[in-house]
Length: 182
Image (cartoon, rainbow, N blue to C red; front, side, top):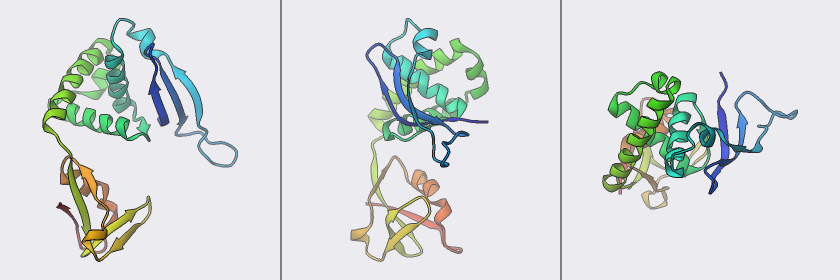
């Protein structure tokens, strides 16, 4: 099953979304992602009477069902929050995906949840310690380490478990990832 990878996404004034994306199962002749620019009109056509803010929430709720991936951090954060919302409420993704009215209801609830979370969920600063060394820089395949805490990269997250999940593949031997709050 394929999913969409969004390199950039911007909501226009009329409620449509200007996207630069690629499908996960297509590449160009050199094996690179085949990113194309296009306008998403689906939410304007399906939900013509709702606000632009709600259309954005609908896109986020839709993306957690079909597995879309976002490069922009603000969209990534909203998607993470939507997943948390669905888990906390105990809602079923497949029911929502097949029922447009239920998706609209969940999107409205998600906006309220997001607003409440914004009030109470401030970002904290953390450094990551693996094998008594601090992460100075992280790439997709490797962590560059330093023995000095003052040179460690400072990560912002809501709680330490987010970073533990992010670094779980970078364990060395039996040592675990330690996330320290600054």
